[in-house]
Length: 473
Image 1 (cartoon, rainbow, N blue to C red):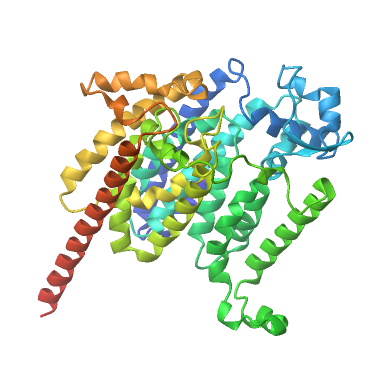
Image 2: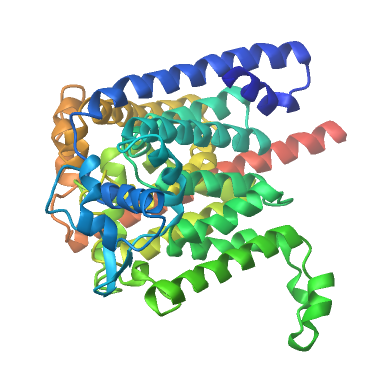
Protein backbone atom coordinates (compact mmCIF):
# COMPACT_ATOMS: atom_id res chain seq x y z
CA UNK A 1 0.00 0.00 0.00
CA UNK A 2 2.85 2.36 0.86
CA UNK A 3 4.42 1.83 -2.57
CA UNK A 4 1.11 2.45 -4.37
CA UNK A 5 0.58 5.62 -2.37
CA UNK A 6 4.09 6.89 -3.10
CA UNK A 7 3.64 6.06 -6.79
CA UNK A 8 0.61 8.32 -6.94
CA UNK A 9 2.62 11.01 -5.18
CA UNK A 10 5.33 10.91 -7.83
CA UNK A 11 3.02 11.12 -10.83
CA UNK A 12 4.55 14.44 -11.78
CA UNK A 13 7.83 12.77 -12.73
CA UNK A 14 8.53 13.04 -16.45
CA UNK A 15 10.02 9.69 -17.35
CA UNK A 16 8.17 6.51 -16.43
CA UNK A 17 11.34 4.56 -15.72
CA UNK A 18 12.68 7.30 -13.46
CA UNK A 19 9.33 7.51 -11.71
CA UNK A 20 9.28 3.76 -10.99
CA UNK A 21 12.86 3.73 -9.69
CA UNK A 22 12.27 6.74 -7.47
CA UNK A 23 8.95 5.33 -6.27
CA UNK A 24 10.62 2.12 -5.13
CA UNK A 25 13.45 4.08 -3.54
CA UNK A 26 11.13 6.48 -1.70
CA UNK A 27 8.77 3.66 -0.68
CA UNK A 28 11.69 1.80 0.84
CA UNK A 29 12.96 4.90 2.67
CA UNK A 30 9.55 5.77 4.10
CA UNK A 31 8.95 2.15 5.09
CA UNK A 32 12.30 2.05 6.93
CA UNK A 33 11.41 5.28 8.75
CA UNK A 34 8.01 3.89 9.75
CA UNK A 35 9.43 0.57 10.99
CA UNK A 36 12.30 2.34 12.78
CA UNK A 37 9.88 4.60 14.66
CA UNK A 38 7.46 1.81 15.47
CA UNK A 39 10.30 -0.47 16.62
CA UNK A 40 11.30 2.03 19.30
CA UNK A 41 7.84 3.32 20.14
CA UNK A 42 6.32 -0.09 20.92
CA UNK A 43 8.95 -0.65 23.60
CA UNK A 44 7.77 2.34 25.60
CA UNK A 45 4.00 1.91 25.54
CA UNK A 46 4.02 -0.22 28.70
CA UNK A 47 7.01 1.42 30.36
CA UNK A 48 6.29 5.16 30.24
CA UNK A 49 3.10 6.73 31.54
CA UNK A 50 0.93 9.17 29.67
CA UNK A 51 2.30 12.65 30.34
CA UNK A 52 1.11 16.25 30.23
CA UNK A 53 -2.14 16.65 28.32
CA UNK A 54 -2.11 13.09 26.91
CA UNK A 55 -4.45 11.53 29.52
CA UNK A 56 -6.89 14.41 29.05
CA UNK A 57 -7.00 13.91 25.27
CA UNK A 58 -7.64 10.20 25.78
CA UNK A 59 -10.24 10.89 28.48
CA UNK A 60 -12.18 13.20 26.16
CA UNK A 61 -12.07 10.56 23.39
CA UNK A 62 -13.08 7.86 25.89
CA UNK A 63 -16.05 9.95 27.05
CA UNK A 64 -17.17 10.53 23.46
CA UNK A 65 -16.99 6.79 22.75
CA UNK A 66 -18.31 5.39 26.05
CA UNK A 67 -20.77 8.02 27.29
CA UNK A 68 -21.53 9.65 23.92
CA UNK A 69 -20.91 13.13 25.30
CA UNK A 70 -18.17 15.75 25.62
CA UNK A 71 -19.37 16.43 29.17
CA UNK A 72 -16.60 14.81 31.22
CA UNK A 73 -18.53 14.50 34.47
CA UNK A 74 -19.25 10.78 33.96
CA UNK A 75 -15.69 10.08 32.84
CA UNK A 76 -14.44 11.76 36.01
CA UNK A 77 -16.98 10.29 38.46
CA UNK A 78 -16.73 6.70 37.20
CA UNK A 79 -12.94 7.00 36.79
CA UNK A 80 -13.27 5.24 33.46
CA UNK A 81 -9.87 6.67 32.57
CA UNK A 82 -8.28 4.05 34.85
CA UNK A 83 -8.45 1.69 31.87
CA UNK A 84 -5.59 3.56 30.25
CA UNK A 85 -4.21 5.87 32.96
CA UNK A 86 -3.83 4.12 36.35
CA UNK A 87 -3.91 7.22 38.51
CA UNK A 88 -7.06 7.46 40.69
CA UNK A 89 -6.31 11.06 41.68
CA UNK A 90 -6.16 12.26 38.08
CA UNK A 91 -8.36 15.26 37.31
CA UNK A 92 -9.32 15.58 33.64
CA UNK A 93 -8.49 19.04 32.28
CA UNK A 94 -11.93 20.62 32.14
CA UNK A 95 -13.82 23.87 32.58
CA UNK A 96 -16.24 23.16 35.44
CA UNK A 97 -19.32 25.20 34.53
CA UNK A 98 -21.42 23.59 37.26
CA UNK A 99 -21.58 20.40 39.35
CA UNK A 100 -23.02 18.55 36.35
CA UNK A 101 -21.21 20.26 33.48
CA UNK A 102 -17.48 19.65 33.08
CA UNK A 103 -16.51 20.36 29.48
CA UNK A 104 -13.02 19.98 27.97
CA UNK A 105 -10.38 22.64 28.37
CA UNK A 106 -8.83 21.36 25.15
CA UNK A 107 -10.05 21.49 21.58
CA UNK A 108 -12.21 18.59 20.46
CA UNK A 109 -10.44 18.10 17.12
CA UNK A 110 -7.69 15.69 18.22
CA UNK A 111 -9.91 13.66 20.62
CA UNK A 112 -12.49 13.25 17.83
CA UNK A 113 -9.76 11.61 15.71
CA UNK A 114 -8.88 9.30 18.63
CA UNK A 115 -12.47 8.37 19.49
CA UNK A 116 -13.03 5.49 16.97
CA UNK A 117 -10.14 3.53 18.50
CA UNK A 118 -11.93 3.37 21.85
CA UNK A 119 -14.55 1.17 20.20
CA UNK A 120 -11.74 -1.34 19.58
CA UNK A 121 -10.26 -1.36 23.06
CA UNK A 122 -10.59 0.25 26.48
CA UNK A 123 -6.89 1.08 26.21
CA UNK A 124 -6.08 1.63 22.51
CA UNK A 125 -2.70 3.25 23.12
CA UNK A 126 -0.90 0.88 20.73
CA UNK A 127 -3.39 1.74 17.96
CA UNK A 128 -2.98 5.43 18.71
CA UNK A 129 0.81 5.24 18.54
CA UNK A 130 0.53 3.53 15.15
CA UNK A 131 -1.85 6.31 14.07
CA UNK A 132 0.63 8.95 15.24
CA UNK A 133 3.39 7.19 13.32
CA UNK A 134 1.25 7.32 10.16
CA UNK A 135 0.54 11.03 10.72
CA UNK A 136 4.24 11.86 11.17
CA UNK A 137 5.14 9.76 8.13
CA UNK A 138 2.46 11.47 6.02
CA UNK A 139 3.66 14.84 7.29
CA UNK A 140 7.22 14.00 6.21
CA UNK A 141 5.97 12.89 2.78
CA UNK A 142 3.99 16.10 2.34
CA UNK A 143 7.02 18.23 3.20
CA UNK A 144 8.93 16.29 0.53
CA UNK A 145 6.15 16.92 -2.00
CA UNK A 146 5.90 20.57 -1.06
CA UNK A 147 9.63 21.09 -1.69
CA UNK A 148 9.40 19.25 -5.02
CA UNK A 149 6.46 21.39 -6.07
CA UNK A 150 8.46 24.51 -5.20
CA UNK A 151 11.22 23.45 -7.58
CA UNK A 152 13.83 21.94 -5.26
CA UNK A 153 15.77 18.90 -6.45
CA UNK A 154 14.61 15.36 -5.78
CA UNK A 155 17.33 14.32 -3.33
CA UNK A 156 17.41 17.70 -1.61
CA UNK A 157 13.63 17.53 -1.15
CA UNK A 158 13.99 14.05 0.33
CA UNK A 159 16.98 14.85 2.54
CA UNK A 160 15.64 17.93 4.35
CA UNK A 161 12.35 16.49 5.69
CA UNK A 162 14.11 13.34 6.87
CA UNK A 163 16.65 15.33 8.83
CA UNK A 164 13.75 17.21 10.38
CA UNK A 165 11.81 14.00 11.10
CA UNK A 166 14.79 12.46 12.89
CA UNK A 167 15.56 15.58 14.92
CA UNK A 168 13.70 16.95 17.92
CA UNK A 169 10.92 17.66 18.55
CA UNK A 170 9.39 15.76 15.61
CA UNK A 171 11.47 12.62 16.23
CA UNK A 172 9.75 11.85 19.53
CA UNK A 173 6.20 12.80 18.55
CA UNK A 174 5.61 9.26 17.27
CA UNK A 175 5.28 7.84 20.79
CA UNK A 176 3.46 10.81 22.29
CA UNK A 177 -0.21 11.57 21.70
CA UNK A 178 -0.08 15.32 21.22
CA UNK A 179 -2.04 17.11 18.50
CA UNK A 180 0.82 19.10 16.94
CA UNK A 181 1.75 16.55 14.20
CA UNK A 182 -1.87 16.54 12.97
CA UNK A 183 -2.00 20.35 13.00
CA UNK A 184 1.32 20.49 11.12
CA UNK A 185 -0.03 18.06 8.51
CA UNK A 186 -3.11 20.24 8.00
CA UNK A 187 -0.92 23.34 7.61
CA UNK A 188 1.53 21.77 5.14
CA UNK A 189 -1.21 20.25 2.98
CA UNK A 190 -3.10 23.56 2.93
CA UNK A 191 0.15 25.27 1.87
CA UNK A 192 0.63 22.77 -0.95
CA UNK A 193 -2.82 23.60 -2.29
CA UNK A 194 -2.68 27.29 -1.40
CA UNK A 195 -3.21 28.71 -4.89
CA UNK A 196 -5.92 26.23 -5.87
CA UNK A 197 -7.53 24.80 -2.71
CA UNK A 198 -9.37 21.49 -3.09
CA UNK A 199 -11.99 20.04 -0.77
CA UNK A 200 -9.38 18.20 1.33
CA UNK A 201 -7.17 21.25 1.88
CA UNK A 202 -10.31 23.29 2.61
CA UNK A 203 -11.32 20.69 5.19
CA UNK A 204 -7.81 20.87 6.72
CA UNK A 205 -8.11 24.66 7.11
CA UNK A 206 -11.62 24.36 8.56
CA UNK A 207 -10.46 21.69 11.03
CA UNK A 208 -7.58 23.74 12.48
CA UNK A 209 -9.74 25.78 14.94
CA UNK A 210 -11.17 22.50 16.26
CA UNK A 211 -7.65 21.27 17.06
CA UNK A 212 -6.85 24.51 18.91
CA UNK A 213 -8.44 27.94 18.74
CA UNK A 214 -5.00 29.59 18.41
CA UNK A 215 -4.76 28.28 14.83
CA UNK A 216 -7.37 30.84 13.81
CA UNK A 217 -4.37 33.12 13.30
CA UNK A 218 -3.37 30.96 10.30
CA UNK A 219 -6.74 31.24 8.58
CA UNK A 220 -6.30 34.69 6.90
CA UNK A 221 -3.36 33.32 4.92
CA UNK A 222 -5.29 30.27 3.74
CA UNK A 223 -8.51 32.18 2.98
CA UNK A 224 -6.73 34.91 1.01
CA UNK A 225 -6.56 33.09 -2.39
CA UNK A 226 -10.22 32.09 -2.10
CA UNK A 227 -11.60 35.64 -1.70
CA UNK A 228 -11.40 38.79 -3.81
CA UNK A 229 -11.73 41.45 -1.12
CA UNK A 230 -11.89 44.29 -3.66
CA UNK A 231 -15.49 43.28 -4.38
CA UNK A 232 -16.58 43.37 -0.73
CA UNK A 233 -19.57 45.63 0.04
CA UNK A 234 -21.59 45.37 3.25
CA UNK A 235 -24.81 46.26 1.43
CA UNK A 236 -24.20 43.75 -1.36
CA UNK A 237 -23.18 40.56 0.43
CA UNK A 238 -25.11 38.39 -2.04
CA UNK A 239 -23.18 39.90 -4.95
CA UNK A 240 -19.94 39.47 -3.00
CA UNK A 241 -20.69 35.77 -2.49
CA UNK A 242 -21.25 35.34 -6.25
CA UNK A 243 -18.39 37.54 -7.42
CA UNK A 244 -15.90 37.98 -4.58
CA UNK A 245 -15.74 34.43 -3.24
CA UNK A 246 -13.57 32.59 -5.75
CA UNK A 247 -13.47 29.28 -3.84
CA UNK A 248 -16.86 28.63 -2.28
CA UNK A 249 -15.85 25.20 -0.92
CA UNK A 250 -13.00 26.70 1.12
CA UNK A 251 -15.03 29.60 2.48
CA UNK A 252 -18.17 27.51 3.11
CA UNK A 253 -16.32 24.84 5.09
CA UNK A 254 -14.49 27.45 7.15
CA UNK A 255 -17.67 29.40 7.94
CA UNK A 256 -19.50 26.19 8.84
CA UNK A 257 -16.60 25.17 11.09
CA UNK A 258 -16.53 28.51 12.91
CA UNK A 259 -20.31 28.49 13.40
CA UNK A 260 -20.08 24.96 14.84
CA UNK A 261 -17.27 26.01 17.20
CA UNK A 262 -19.30 29.00 18.39
CA UNK A 263 -22.43 26.85 18.73
CA UNK A 264 -20.63 24.20 20.78
CA UNK A 265 -19.01 26.84 23.01
CA UNK A 266 -22.38 28.51 23.67
CA UNK A 267 -23.87 25.13 24.57
CA UNK A 268 -20.95 23.92 26.69
CA UNK A 269 -19.54 27.07 28.28
CA UNK A 270 -22.35 29.62 27.87
CA UNK A 271 -19.95 31.80 25.90
CA UNK A 272 -18.47 31.94 22.40
CA UNK A 273 -15.13 31.24 24.08
CA UNK A 274 -13.88 28.07 25.74
CA UNK A 275 -11.21 27.19 28.26
CA UNK A 276 -8.50 27.27 25.59
CA UNK A 277 -8.30 31.08 25.66
CA UNK A 278 -7.72 31.28 29.40
CA UNK A 279 -3.92 31.17 29.36
CA UNK A 280 -1.94 32.81 32.12
CA UNK A 281 0.09 36.01 32.08
CA UNK A 282 -0.68 37.29 28.59
CA UNK A 283 2.11 39.71 27.65
CA UNK A 284 3.43 39.66 31.21
CA UNK A 285 6.60 37.89 30.16
CA UNK A 286 9.16 38.50 27.45
CA UNK A 287 11.71 35.76 27.99
CA UNK A 288 9.61 33.19 26.12
CA UNK A 289 10.28 34.92 22.80
CA UNK A 290 13.99 34.15 23.11
CA UNK A 291 13.61 31.17 25.44
CA UNK A 292 11.56 29.24 22.85
CA UNK A 293 14.68 29.27 20.73
CA UNK A 294 17.70 29.09 23.02
CA UNK A 295 16.70 28.09 26.55
CA UNK A 296 18.75 25.06 27.57
CA UNK A 297 15.77 22.94 28.69
CA UNK A 298 12.96 24.29 26.52
CA UNK A 299 14.63 25.97 23.55
CA UNK A 300 14.41 24.68 19.99
CA UNK A 301 17.99 25.39 18.93
CA UNK A 302 19.42 23.92 22.14
CA UNK A 303 17.80 20.56 21.32
CA UNK A 304 17.90 20.77 17.50
CA UNK A 305 20.74 23.09 16.38
CA UNK A 306 19.82 22.44 12.73
CA UNK A 307 17.08 25.08 12.99
CA UNK A 308 19.73 27.76 13.47
CA UNK A 309 20.41 27.32 9.74
CA UNK A 310 16.81 28.37 9.02
CA UNK A 311 17.70 32.01 9.70
CA UNK A 312 20.38 31.82 7.02
CA UNK A 313 17.95 30.14 4.63
CA UNK A 314 15.19 32.68 5.27
CA UNK A 315 17.48 35.43 3.99
CA UNK A 316 18.07 33.46 0.78
CA UNK A 317 14.38 32.62 0.49
CA UNK A 318 13.51 36.32 0.63
CA UNK A 319 15.54 36.79 -2.54
CA UNK A 320 14.65 33.61 -4.42
CA UNK A 321 10.94 33.23 -3.63
CA UNK A 322 9.38 36.29 -2.03
CA UNK A 323 5.83 34.87 -1.86
CA UNK A 324 6.99 31.65 -0.19
CA UNK A 325 9.10 33.70 2.22
CA UNK A 326 6.07 35.67 3.39
CA UNK A 327 3.99 32.51 3.78
CA UNK A 328 6.69 30.88 5.91
CA UNK A 329 7.33 34.05 7.92
CA UNK A 330 3.64 34.66 8.56
CA UNK A 331 2.97 31.16 9.88
CA UNK A 332 6.21 30.73 11.84
CA UNK A 333 6.33 34.30 13.13
CA UNK A 334 2.78 34.50 14.44
CA UNK A 335 2.83 31.17 16.28
CA UNK A 336 6.26 31.91 17.76
CA UNK A 337 5.07 35.33 18.96
CA UNK A 338 1.72 34.11 20.29
CA UNK A 339 3.45 31.29 22.22
CA UNK A 340 6.40 33.32 23.49
CA UNK A 341 4.34 36.05 25.18
CA UNK A 342 2.69 33.59 27.57
CA UNK A 343 4.28 32.63 30.88
CA UNK A 344 3.69 28.92 30.16
CA UNK A 345 5.49 29.06 26.82
CA UNK A 346 7.66 26.08 27.75
CA UNK A 347 4.73 23.65 27.60
CA UNK A 348 5.21 22.11 31.04
CA UNK A 349 5.49 18.32 30.98
CA UNK A 350 5.97 17.94 27.24
CA UNK A 351 8.81 17.41 24.77
CA UNK A 352 11.13 20.33 24.17
CA UNK A 353 9.72 22.93 21.75
CA UNK A 354 6.40 21.08 21.50
CA UNK A 355 4.51 24.39 21.59
CA UNK A 356 5.95 25.50 18.23
CA UNK A 357 6.28 22.09 16.58
CA UNK A 358 3.33 22.84 14.30
CA UNK A 359 5.28 25.40 12.28
CA UNK A 360 8.66 23.65 12.15
CA UNK A 361 7.90 21.73 8.90
CA UNK A 362 7.08 25.11 7.34
CA UNK A 363 10.78 25.97 7.70
CA UNK A 364 11.80 23.19 5.28
CA UNK A 365 12.32 25.58 2.29
CA UNK A 366 14.60 27.73 4.44
CA UNK A 367 16.75 24.72 5.33
CA UNK A 368 16.81 23.64 1.68
CA UNK A 369 18.02 27.10 0.63
CA UNK A 370 21.11 26.75 2.84
CA UNK A 371 22.28 23.75 0.81
CA UNK A 372 22.10 25.59 -2.53
CA UNK A 373 23.82 28.82 -1.51
CA UNK A 374 27.09 29.83 -3.24
CA UNK A 375 30.19 28.22 -1.71
CA UNK A 376 28.15 25.03 -1.51
CA UNK A 377 30.67 22.89 0.26
CA UNK A 378 31.28 25.48 2.98
CA UNK A 379 27.58 25.73 3.78
CA UNK A 380 27.12 21.98 3.49
CA UNK A 381 29.79 21.55 6.15
CA UNK A 382 28.05 24.23 8.23
CA UNK A 383 24.74 22.39 7.77
CA UNK A 384 26.43 19.09 8.69
CA UNK A 385 27.94 20.51 11.88
CA UNK A 386 24.46 21.51 13.00
CA UNK A 387 22.86 18.32 11.73
CA UNK A 388 25.09 15.84 13.58
CA UNK A 389 24.23 16.99 17.13
CA UNK A 390 20.57 17.38 16.07
CA UNK A 391 20.42 13.74 14.97
CA UNK A 392 22.33 12.61 18.04
CA UNK A 393 19.88 14.34 20.36
CA UNK A 394 16.95 13.08 18.28
CA UNK A 395 18.21 9.50 18.58
CA UNK A 396 18.80 9.99 22.30
CA UNK A 397 15.17 11.11 22.60
CA UNK A 398 14.01 7.98 20.75
CA UNK A 399 16.08 5.69 22.95
CA UNK A 400 15.33 7.36 26.27
CA UNK A 401 11.84 8.96 26.45
CA UNK A 402 12.40 10.04 30.04
CA UNK A 403 15.13 12.40 28.86
CA UNK A 404 12.50 14.12 26.74
CA UNK A 405 9.69 14.06 29.29
CA UNK A 406 11.90 15.43 32.06
CA UNK A 407 13.82 17.68 29.65
CA UNK A 408 17.23 16.32 30.58
CA UNK A 409 18.45 16.34 27.01
CA UNK A 410 20.82 19.14 27.86
CA UNK A 411 22.87 16.56 29.77
CA UNK A 412 23.68 15.10 26.39
CA UNK A 413 25.63 18.19 25.41
CA UNK A 414 28.43 16.25 27.08
CA UNK A 415 28.23 13.87 24.11
CA UNK A 416 29.05 16.74 21.78
CA UNK A 417 31.96 17.73 23.98
CA UNK A 418 33.63 14.46 23.06
CA UNK A 419 33.66 15.68 19.45
CA UNK A 420 34.02 19.42 20.07
CA UNK A 421 35.88 20.24 23.31
CA UNK A 422 33.86 23.36 24.08
CA UNK A 423 31.42 24.43 26.80
CA UNK A 424 28.20 24.78 24.80
CA UNK A 425 26.04 25.16 27.88
CA UNK A 426 27.02 28.78 28.47
CA UNK A 427 25.23 29.64 25.21
CA UNK A 428 22.03 27.98 26.38
CA UNK A 429 21.32 29.06 29.98
CA UNK A 430 19.18 26.78 32.08
CA UNK A 431 17.22 29.56 33.77
CA UNK A 432 14.25 31.00 31.91
CA UNK A 433 15.17 34.65 32.39
CA UNK A 434 18.13 35.09 30.12
CA UNK A 435 20.58 37.93 30.62
CA UNK A 436 20.10 41.01 28.45
CA UNK A 437 23.55 40.67 26.89
CA UNK A 438 22.91 37.07 25.85
CA UNK A 439 19.51 38.03 24.45
CA UNK A 440 21.09 40.73 22.34
CA UNK A 441 23.87 38.40 21.23
CA UNK A 442 21.39 35.80 19.97
CA UNK A 443 19.37 38.48 18.19
CA UNK A 444 22.56 39.70 16.50
CA UNK A 445 23.38 36.12 15.43
CA UNK A 446 19.89 35.59 13.97
CA UNK A 447 19.97 38.91 12.08
CA UNK A 448 23.54 38.34 10.86
CA UNK A 449 22.63 34.92 9.46
CA UNK A 450 19.56 36.36 7.71
CA UNK A 451 21.58 39.21 6.18
CA UNK A 452 24.34 36.80 5.07
CA UNK A 453 21.79 34.54 3.39
CA UNK A 454 20.17 37.54 1.69
CA UNK A 455 23.52 38.89 0.47
CA UNK A 456 24.76 35.58 -0.94
CA UNK A 457 21.47 34.77 -2.67
CA UNK A 458 21.27 38.30 -4.11
CA UNK A 459 24.81 38.05 -5.41
CA UNK A 460 24.10 34.61 -6.91
CA UNK A 461 20.94 35.89 -8.58
CA UNK A 462 22.78 38.89 -10.02
CA UNK A 463 25.53 36.68 -11.45
CA UNK A 464 22.94 34.36 -13.06
CA UNK A 465 21.21 37.37 -14.61
CA UNK A 466 24.50 38.63 -16.04
CA UNK A 467 25.27 35.17 -17.45
CA UNK A 468 21.85 34.99 -19.14
CA UNK A 469 22.30 38.42 -20.68
CA UNK A 470 25.72 37.44 -22.02
CA UNK A 471 24.33 34.24 -23.55
CA UNK A 472 21.41 36.09 -25.15
CA UNK A 473 23.70 38.76 -26.55
